[in-house]
Image 1 (cartoon, rainbow, N blue to C red):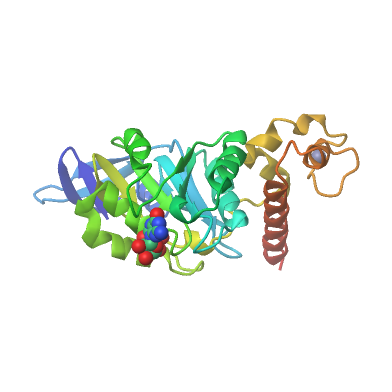
Image 2 (cartoon, rainbow, N blue to C red):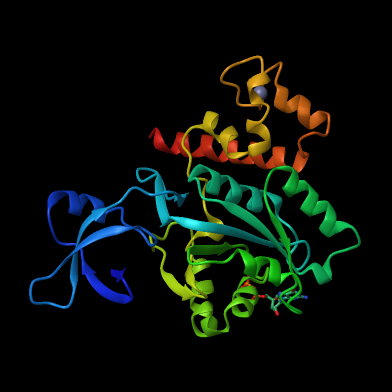
Length: 291
Ligand code: GDP
Ligand code: ZN
C-alpha cells in the first residue's frame, strides 16, 4: 500500500497491532490514516484509519456483502451519453443511489451533447436537476462545457463512473493531459467484473486525485435493506413521510404518496422504475444471504 505523507509517497506496511490488522481489511484508497515511521527504514506502518466522510461501495456477493471501493470522494461524476451508447437510466440512478448511500456528493456529466437530438439535453438536465443533482452537459470531442467542470475540481479525490464508450477517458484526458498514459489502465480496471475484489487506486489529477473504480460498471447496489433505499433518492425522501404506511417500500402499499407523485408527474417515472429495479436487486441479495 502507498501512503502520501506531505509531498512524499511512502510504502506503508499493514503489520502491527490488532486494531491495525482489523483496519487493514478495510483500508481503501482515499482513506486518511495515521502511520508510524519504521525504525531505520524508509517506509511506514499503518497505525489507524480515521472515520470516513464518505465512501463508495458495491455489493460483492453473499457472505461478503458491502465493500468500500474508495473513501472520502470529493465528487463522484456519473458520466453518461444519450446516444452511442444509448442512455441506461437504471445504471445512472444506481450509481447516484450508491453515492447517496455512502454520503458521497455526486453530479452527472452528460457527454456527447453533439450527438443528442433537439431538446434532449435540456430534458435530461431538467430531470436530474429536479432531483437535486448538478448536471454538466459536455462534448469531449470539442471541449464544450468542460470549463464548468474545471471550476469544480480542486485538491480532493474525484471519480468518474460510467458505461464503456460514454467518453470517460476522453473527458479525463482533456481535463488533465498528463494522465494520458494511465487512463487506459484506469478504464481497463474499471471494466472488470462485479466479483473481483480489486480495490481502487488514486492517480494525481490536476491539483487532486483521480480514483479508478473497479467493478462499478456492473456493480450491485450496496444496501441490504429495501426500506433504506428511499433515502437514496432525494426526490422520494422529500415526500415519503406522506405515505399511509410506515415504513413504506413505495412498491405495492396502498396510500403511497410516492406512487401518487409518479402518477401526477412530480417524480420522473424513469427514476421510479430505477428505484423498483434496485429494490428487486436488494431482494435478490437478501434471498442469496439466507442460504
Ligand atoms: P470510455 O470508454 O468511457 O472511456 O470512452 P472513450 O473516452 O474511450 O470514448 C469512446 C468513444 O467516444 C471514442 O471514440 C471517443 O472519441 C468518442 N467520444 C468521446 N467523447 C465524445 C463526444 O463528446 N462526442 C462524440 N461524438 N464522440 C465522443
Ligand atoms: Zn410509499
